Structures are given as C-alpha cells and as structure tokens.
Image (cartoon, rainbow, N blue to C red; front, side, top):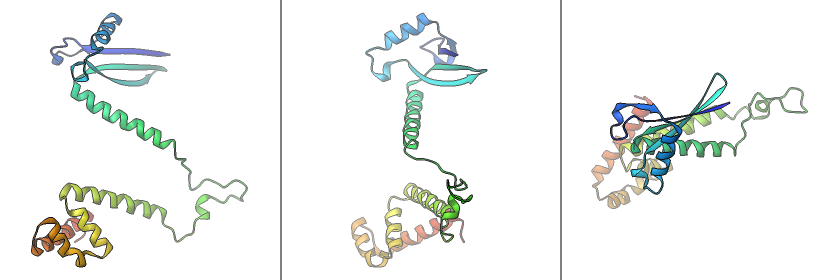
Length: 187
C-alpha cells in the first residue's frame, strides 16, 4: 500500500512559520503556478520515501531553492552511483567455486597478492592527492615528479614554469614532504 504526503509552507512568503499538509486542491494550484517559471522562482520540493508498518509513505516537502539545489545534486549523484553499481558484480572471496571440492575464490589467488592491502593503499593515495590539492595548487605536480624520480632533473624547469626561485622550489619540496609525513602520522 502506498500513501503520498505533501508538506507545504503555512505561509509561502515566510517559511519560518512552518509546514502543513497540503490538500489536493492546494497541490494542484502550486503545480499550475510553477509551470513556465524559471527554477529559481518556483516553489521547490524534495522527495523522500520510507516504509511505516508496511505502508510506503512518499513525501514531498517544500524547501528553499538553495536547499532544493543541494538535495537535487545529492539525489543525482545517488542515481549515478546506482547506475554504476549495476555494471559490477560483487563476489565474496569466501564463495565456493562450483564443481570444486569446496575451493573458494580466495584459494585460487596467489598468496603473494595482498588484495586488501592494495585496495587500502590505493584509497590512501587518492585521499592524499585530494588533501594535497586542497592544501596547495602545486603539490600534486611536485608529488608526481617525486614519485617518478625526475624531480631533481626537472626542478629548474618547474621554477621557470611557476615563476619562482630555486630556493622557493626547495622550500615547497620540504613543505610537501612535511605535509605528507603529517598526513600519514609519521615523524
């Protein structure tokens, strides 16, 4: 069984007065008045659904335009994630392989491969890159040169490119190393 609840502002000119449940007539009038208006002028609603005692309650709740934009962004992201998940199949590594004597997927992998460690390393690397990007605009480029082992040979080119002195570039290198140590809680 389904139920739809529509909550609108008691006073559309003053949202601070709270919400009330709308009648079908009020809801129809709002939909009619919204037609043809640009989004920023419309009365905006977010949608939420939940189950209560076997009844699915679908709610439309009136919110400000800014709150609607934030909700819509998150809702669109959820939709993209759900679509992306359909492309992948999750398998348990403890799942027995058909036609074997109880052998699991984990048993078929070489013992030298540390899947969990590799995944955690990749996740930490992504988090580090994000933190570096938020910290300094030049940090990820410096990290790339450091990881490739070409920082010493490219440092003069970086100075010219960024318009900074050699001393500044060495200070940046030291700052980045300290940032990474702090990020990983080392030293």
